Length: 480
Image 1: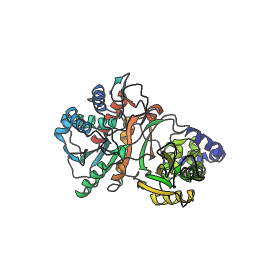
Image 2 (image 1 turned 45 degrees about the vertical axis):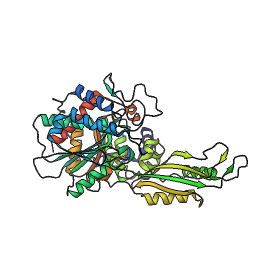
Image 3 (image 1 turned 90 degrees about the vertical axis):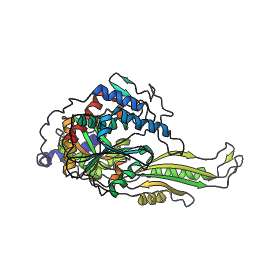
Image 4 (image 1 turned 180 degrees about the horizontal axis):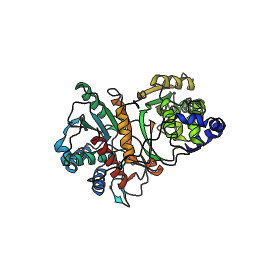
């Protein structure tokens, strides 16, 4: 992204600098520094030990029936009750479906509730080269190591540390607080849907919903020296498609031209050579605008022109790297290939699995239609395995977003707060059916290396970061 905006600056610097005195007035004044975050009563080392215990329970989810160790999930739920006894004594708990957890902490008013989300299933570690046992929960050199340390057991522990401390202090929140903990987020399961169904049946519309997503990051934009807390307002859609071709087959000693694998290969190359168009959505534009208020010259003047530079910035971002590219277009990844089951037999069927992340403004239907046009081969079939459209865009002009932003600035006073488009999928998207204030933000300051370890080897979180994340949640709940 740094390279992208540097290139954009080259093309627009002259116009931006000429009008900078006028355009800079667009930016709102920088807010006053918040009071320091109160971490008194939150045990950093204790939180690390408790997270380590939960990491040691391998709650790996799978889409293949029978592959999930349901006993591990049951042990995890029992361990939660052991580690957080005050929370489990004070809050009402119910189990939804196979293991999704929904807690209710009754508040002192009938105002709409806050929902804090996390999930406790994790992705597999097969084929990854870890420097430590991924399920050891090792606490070493100021870090908690293991699968789920950040995604997403770290968030769950930060929430529970905050709730446990507030219950111990005799605090009652002003509005109800619900904790919605999913057991199948990594496989796009039903846990969060069941929670939304429960809210719907009970006539509850949340004041705000907060799930994993953005984080506190550094180096996103040139000219912005500090950190940026990016709060997701929306997320891209998810679509899994099988591209299938068929043939008569036969012995491999007498192949035919243009067989099923060849036609599949041509289809994949066509998709690769004709990417979806790049567009700068309002959410991404809002991120540029918000961050730009904290930039120095000449970048501040450049960011002030972001709306006028929208088409050019979209093109530049699309060429800046895979993360920036994912912000501005629908992306297609070929994740699995299948052909003949034997080395000397021609394939009667060739298949490619596409994992697609749909940009805001597009739909499952429009995405499939475009793929068919690009492939342009009636012998190639597209089968939709599963799909969901992009989420609605949550509000950024209300009290809920202001309170979450204020808590982020209290936890990280040096960080700018900016809206963000989440390119992955989360359970939060289901709550958009019943709330217009669904946000994606992990209150963790994460380095590029730590972010790169998500779903990869050597996932870890620092003890200090976990501690501060618990402080964020406690501050948010206490200031409802």
